[in-house]
Length: 500
Image 1: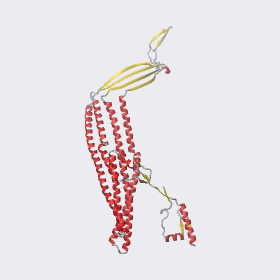
Image 2: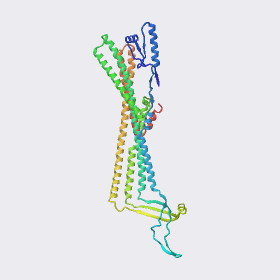
Image 3: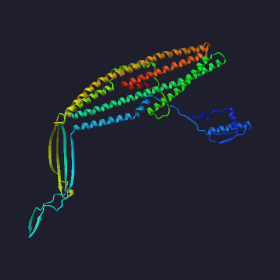
Image 4: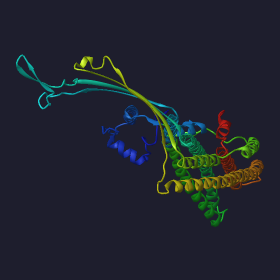
């Protein structure tokens, strides 16, 4: 962070006449302290000025200027992807599908269940039917049946295994696996798209920065030219028409300077927002690669694009597999479900709670083979079968369409790269020619063979040509990045800037 102790915002310009009046009456400091300085002598005036100046210097808070934080291209991209909520949501969806896949697999495995219950039953003596009446020593006694135990317990163990389901379970497992893979491809597509967008935004912001710097240079050159022409016009060596044209050019250059500065500020702020960088001001540190490195890298990308299988094609293939699995499930509706189940139960009973589960006795034992077949469902199964067959055919047609569209998209990006490189070559020739022309113009100017106005015009043309060449270099990087992220070679593209 830079520390600036003196700034025009704290020391505004005051004309001498106003300063004399101010010193002659009352001098006001930044904190409202009034110091009256009568003008009696020059010595007293000087001492008062220095005293007031030191007071302002001490009491005025220093002006802090924030130094822009240097940001590389891969730093901006990694920050954006790391803070992306959309990517995080897609990651969680993949985990959910993976869990559903595990649930589907569990259908293949047997299930083993156990249960234990403890019952308490209270019986009332009143209301029971008498079992018999006997005579005991001359007395008649009514005999009632023995009441059952007040407490009882049961323990059950049950086993179940699906033996045949017509391929339904295996198809469901396959569907969950393919759906998880689909979401994984969706995540890769979103990741590449965001990387591509941030890369383009980064380079566009760099173009805005170059345009701002060039606009400053051009505005200063036209200002110098206008001052020179004004001096010639005052001496009568220049027509009003030429002077007016120079004034218009100066005005347009200054307006363009303000506009480019606003655009750069907006682009810079937008880049910070999209990348979630924790800085209020950034400086783009990555620069386009050298001209000689562009053509070999482009040829490398063209070669890789021939063997690359687009994500959309992979997704279409997965959709075909899912449709085929759904078709297999629709077939299983016409087949029986066969299940093997068995179980065993234990019980105990006693009039005391503590003895109601100490001695469990073997109860019922069973083995059951169940076959379930749907005889009629209102033709729903037949309609489901037809639907799944049509969905499979549709997925196959979609695959061929995706291959064609992906090839067209890749070819278009390759064509964009070729056009950008061709344009760069032409603008490089123009920039080299302007460099030679400017050097020659400087020599002629030093030998008084060229006027100051002419040399300034040459400098303006040179600055324009240089800006076009720099912008063309960045446009090539944008085209290369779009192609690289399209064919899954984004990491290869970013490694070109890792050494910067």
